[in-house]
Length: 358
Ligand SMILES: [Zn+2]
Image (cartoon, rainbow, N blue to C red):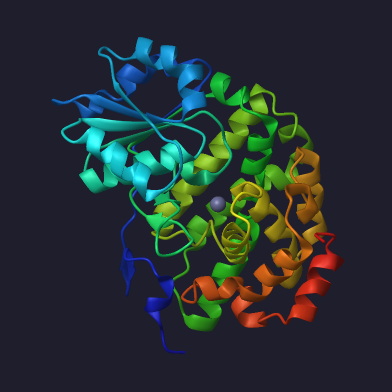
C-alpha cells in the first residue's frame, strides 16, 4: 500500500521523522501553588510575568499566586477561548518574560497560544481537570477557520495544586474523565488509519494514552469519589495524555472520531455540554462502531457522574444523529471509523438509540 503521509495533518509528522515536544517539568501536590515563583525561575530575564486567568479563578487564587511571586504580575482576564482574547493577552505580554495560564480550560488555551505566538515560555497552572489541554501542545479556540484544536507548543512547565483542583466543581472533574476514556477510541481510530492509509502510528504513545483511559475505565468507582488521591490520579493521567500527544507529534493518540463528534456538536450547540462530556458520550458510540466493549465505557462514565445521554447536557436527538452522519466532514484529513462507515441517518439513529445516548 502506498504511504500517504499527508493524512497526518500535523506539520510535525513527516515522511520518516517527527518532532517530539514535551513539557520539561511538572510539579504536582497539595499546596504547591506557593512554589510558583521558584517554578517559573527558568524563564529568568527581564520583563514581567503575565497571568492569564478567568474572573472566578482570579478571585479564588489571586492572593496565593501573588504571594508566590517575587514581583506583582500583570493580570489579564480571559473571558472566552477565542482569538480576540489571545490578542489581548499578547498585547499585555509584549516584552514579558513568560505567560502563566491559571484556570480551567480557557485561560490555559489562550495563554498557551499567546506565548507560542510571542515565542516566550508558557506555564500551565490548572485549577480544574476538565480536559487534557493542561499539558498538550494544542490550543482549542473559537473563531478559527476550523472547529478543532491547533498545534502550538506544550507548556514549559505544569504546576498542579491538588488542593486547588480538588475544590473544582465535580462536573468539571467528571468531564476530565470523559476526555480520558476517549483515548480508547482515539487509539482505535489511529490504528485503523494506519492500516487503511499508511499513516504513521506510534505504539508507544498509543499505549501511553490507553493507560490513561484505563485509569478511569478500570477504577471508575474510586476515581469518581474525587477525593484528593483520586484527583491526583486523574490529573496525572490527563498530563500523561498530553505527553502522549507530544511523543506522537500529533493529537492522534488523544483525539479520534469521538472528538470529531464532539467538535461537530460544538458547532450545532455551542453552549451545550463540556468538551469532555461530549467526547465521553461520543466514545460510547464509537466504541460500538469499533466493536469493542461500549458498555464498559458507559458504566465508567456513569460511575464518575459524567453524562451518558445527550439530553443530560441539553443536546437534541436530531443533533446527535446529524453529528454522527457529518462529523467526518469537518476534518477530512483525519481518517476514523466514521470515514470508513459513512453512517446514514437511519444507521446513526440506530447507533445512538442502541447505546442509550438518545
Ligand atoms: Zn479532548
